[in-house]
Structures are given as structure tokens and as C-alpha cells.
Length: 489
Picture 1 (cartoon, rainbow, N blue to C red):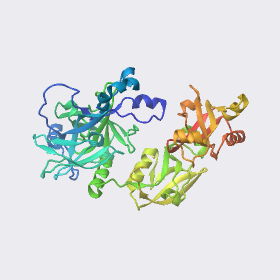
Picture 2: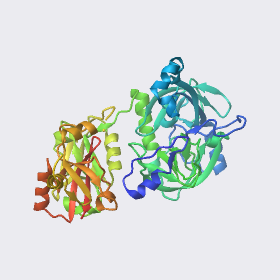
Picture 3: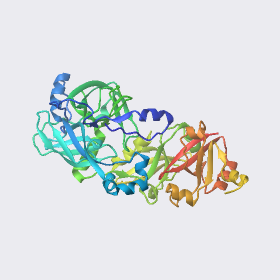
Picture 4: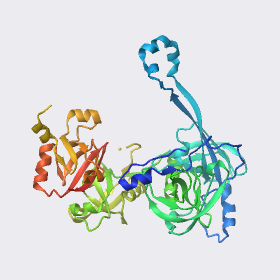
């Protein structure tokens, strides 16, 4: 099982992310024993209808369409010399022939086990991208023991969705439901192949909606306490009418097993990705050309906001749809085509769903005033993201627990910072300070202070002298991205 650790936004989030795993990447060999016969759950593309049947009747209808997936990858490894003597070039010369082969890449076969859902009678299957990415062979086994080699129609690492195809017709399917109709406390069933023991059905409720874990770019996870374990990835989350409402993908666990906190990709998102892949051979998303970030309470006063809802634009790409429409860095988007925006995840999802060429209206707050702007959406790119003591003190002022220097060429070369980025670079962050708590790191570049551009230490001091120092808003550049941070002295 491979674990994915998301980017840490806050210290409290670090504990969560260290325990969040993609749930279905069971590595063959983790458990011993003979291979068992297995059966599987399912899904479909028919129109949702109320069945009114008992749960056993619902399960019986669905399970034939949930399949078992085995994928194989070839892992290349280079053997390492563990002994210092083996790393000594003088010693290696005596064994030149041996060392010609010592560092040659060695290949080993690795198998991964998970689940999938048949969504088309002609052989289309929904599963997770992390189960099939970079694999050489994919085998699908149906509950009736039929086996098929699967081809990858398309994958989307940004949402962790993959679409497979097997060569067959008249297959069992499960109707696609609506995850937008889900309510907290609603009963759901998870169907998959945990630990490769065979098809398993577990029951739980919807514990939360709209969860974000920073595992992938597009998230809106359904949280459930239905047992989800390694091997369940790509399996079905269904409602009591037998409709597919989610694709199981991740678990929160300290042990790697179920602890009652599982996550599924909502079917609305999975359906959109699947239809785009099948129709176009790739995922087509709308593109605005901005970097949104969540607003926190410390930022309200700086941007004239009544509350912490909306998303703050920390960067507007040049010549992007947003730039052409007149959006600016520091704008706060509160509505997207009439839909209220609360988080950056919502903004990204709504923008992606809009599609290229579509005109949308966004409501923003700029300098405390509301404004509506119309944007013609673009198509999202395939891949984005020695001196004396006095001089040293002058060059490295410490403010709010950080040491700073004017950004220089040696910094740019060492950290691959583009020439267009101007400002001061953080050289140290003191522990247990407001700067550390706000998430500032060594190597971050401060490009604005209290919404004023800075290019060097002198600018930095001038801005601080002319504005309040007890509470500071910083625009930070890090690894190709811009974001705002509000900290207090």
C-alpha cells in the first residue's frame, strides 16, 4: 500500500496528513496464503430510480458490477554500496569488472490489488488513478470469475480517477446516483476487495461532505464510517437505492487499516472526468488563470471583508482569461456564476466544471467594494505550478521571527527562482514564533508587505515604517506559487 502525504497547510493538519492513505493500493505479498476466489460489487449508467427494496436486495443487484483489479509494475532499482570500503575508488579499481555490473539497474515486479466499478455494459470501468498509474499490465476479474486484460482509456492524477476498458458486452452495471443529494447521517454501503480476501460489503453513514485532504488538486471528498481498508480503492460507495454516489479512494489511519474514517470521490466529479476521457481522450477543464487561496480571519481587515468566506487571488497569470477580464491580485472572489464560494477547492472545482469558451460572472470584493466581472473561460493547460557586524545586521533584519536578505543572483541559482520575482528572501525562521506558526519557511520570498511591492531590504523597512507593524500581510513566493500570509508581531 502506498501512502500519500499531502502538503501541510497548518500544524494541526500535519497530524492528519501523516495518517491519510490512498485506500486501495494493496501490495501483493503483504499477506500470505493461497489466492482465494473473489466476487465483486458494481455500478451503472442508467437513470436513478427509487427501488424501495431491502438492503440485501440492493446489494445483490449491485455486487456483480464491482470488480477486482490486479495491476503490475516493473520497478527499477540501483543497488547501493553500503560499506565505505566499497565506495572507495582506490578499492574499486581492483574489482573493476565486478563494479561494472554492481550499479546496473535491477528490475523487480510489483503487483497492486484494488477494486473497480463497471459503469458501461460495453466494458467501461471506473477506478482510482493511483491503482493503475505507471503499470505494465492490468487484469480485471469479475465476480463470475471471468478474467480480462484491461486497457487504460485515460487517467486524471489531479482527481485520482482512471477509466479502464475491457473487451466484453452485456456486462452488469450499477446506475449512477447523485452525490449532491447526500445528507449527513444518510446510510451508505462500501463494496470492494479489502486485503484481497474477496468481495466485502460494509455499512455506514455519511459522516461529512466537502472534505479536503490535499492529496490531489481537485477534492470534494465524501467522508464515511463504512469500513474501508487497503484493497478498497476504486470500489463503490452506494446509497440505499443501489446507486453509485462515490468511488472509494482514501482512509485516515494510524495503523493502515480501517478506523472509521474513509473518503470517497463524489460521483459528480468522477462522472465529469469519465465522460471527458471517453469523449475526448483526455480531461478538459475550464481555466481562469489565477491562484486562489482560502481567506482566514486575520486577513479580513486587510481586504475589507465582513467574514472569512470567499477566496483570495494571490496571483493572476499574464494574458490569462482572468487577466483579460480585469481580475487583479488581492481580489476576493465571493461568487462564481451565482454560486457562493467558501473555499479555494470550491473555486477550482467550479472553474473546471465551467469548461472552456463559457462566459461566467464572478462577484469580487476589491478594496472593500463589491464588483461583478465577466470572464470567458479558457482551457486548462495539461501541466501547470563578507561584511562587518553592522552591515550584517542591516542586511539581515529580524522581524516577526524571520531573518531576511535582498534576493540576489546566488539565491536565484540555488533555489531556481525566476528573474521576474523581486523581493527579500527568508534566511531563517525562529522557532515558536508567529512566523513559524503561519507556515513561513527558509527560502520563501516576500514580494509584498501590506499590499505594497518591495524589491529589497530598504523597501521592506520603508513599508514597515509607514504602516502598522503589529499585524502584517505578506505576499509570499514559494516554488512557483504565490500566496498570502497574515501574521502578528
